Amino acid sequence: MAEARVVHTVDRRLGSRQLAALLTGTAGEHPGYRALAHGVRTLLLDGRIPLHTRLPAERELAAALSVSRATVTAAYDVLREGGYALSRRGAGTWTELPEGQRPSNVAAFPAGNDLIELASAAPGAPEPELMAALAAAGSMLAEHAPTPGYHPYGIPELRAAVAERFTRRGLPTLPDQILITTGAQHALSLMLSLLGRQGDRVLVENPSYPNALDAIRDAGLRAVPVPVTEDGWESDLVESSLRQTAPRIAYLVPDFQNPTGSLMPREQRVRILETARATGTWLLIDETIADIALDVPPPAPFASLAPQGVGEQVVTVGSLSKSHWGGLRIGWVRAGSRLITELATKRVPSDMATPVIEQLVALHLLRGVDDVLRERLPRLRAQRDALASSLTRHLPEWRWQLPPGGLSLWVDLGRPVASALAGAALGHGVRIEGGSRFGADPGTHEHRLRIPYVLPAELLEQAVVRLAAALAGDLRGTGEVAGRRHWVA
Image 1 (cartoon, rainbow, N blue to C red):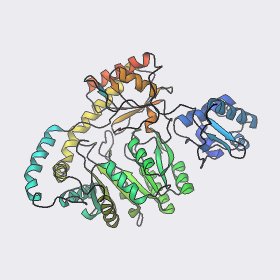
Image 2: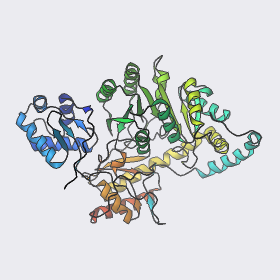
Image 3: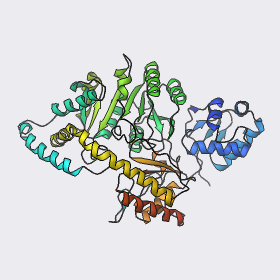
Image 4: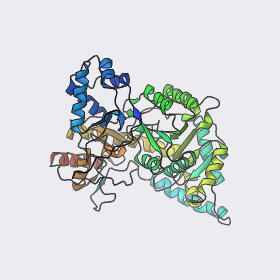
């Protein structure tokens, strides 16, 4: 007997006018039923319609699209036949994915000296500066060695340095508003555990940073996805999601968003701040990539735009992982001083404190951060352009937009083969993640790859040649590994 299909909880709704607006340019002005079904499926796979979302009633959508009800009925039939929708009498029709269409993940640490690593969007360390920082930390360690070495808030010198950098960027900050953490991921997990309770809603971008999405799921929180593309955020959708679902937390990456590279305009930030004040939502802002501004001035901190009385609702996390090195596990939280005290108390049972020696290294690096960026940003810009040039030569059918900052291209393959290609690429000596790894809903973004440009241009050229060879080969039988999650930077 065949297994019964699991029916998921459906608590998301999509209005007829909202869906009609999304379908503009995807299905045509007056679509036939197959074009309409294709448009809905495309929006679902691209993450612009969340999984397990109730679609509009047939009559309502027909009126919004100026087509017959029979056209919508036939389109929903096509979606159901393809596995992209389910229906139940009295409950309507909602989005779904075909059985078995779930993310395919390659092995986390495959062997091979010839492997080109494209799963991690993090640059190597600036070696001269790191060596100098290690030497400086050694000389400063004598001052700390006589102490117990436990600093739940972080050592005072580093807290002051992080606060001073926020102030220079346009957000006046005191040291007691800073908590030093063991990387930004640690900061994020601490904030989720402090602010969230199991079952609370968290508004997230779709696609988004995979490790953040994993942390939200593992904390028992419910993700409320809103789409973001290379063209940015749709303000009306973000605001309506905030007002309709009143999430406890909104996790946003407004600065060169991971993986799309989008930069949120100032006016959108202001509107989100105003809406969050009305809904009482905590804004958890990830600034990990904010320093990687390649074609535009570095953005001011999101919280610097908060009107009076809203700033306390904005929590900012950051780290040195993208600007310097992921091997240096130093991050921070910037929030109100009372929340910082609660957070320090929360961390002690599981973490105690961040190692002093690493904080001293970070202190030295942070004092020279502008010098490191002055050398690093032109190199990343050249590597980005080299990757784009290689893709144009070897894979001209792929499409992308050049981001104004960040560390990767979000590439449209034109067909949903990303997971299969990732598996095949491993056999050609390239480790890369399919776009579904970045989806708030598993199985979406199967036509996308995130391709970082943190490697030298010659290695990026080799990687693209190998990807082209993998794509040209037989992608069948690459061994999908459903349900496995692993580290992606």
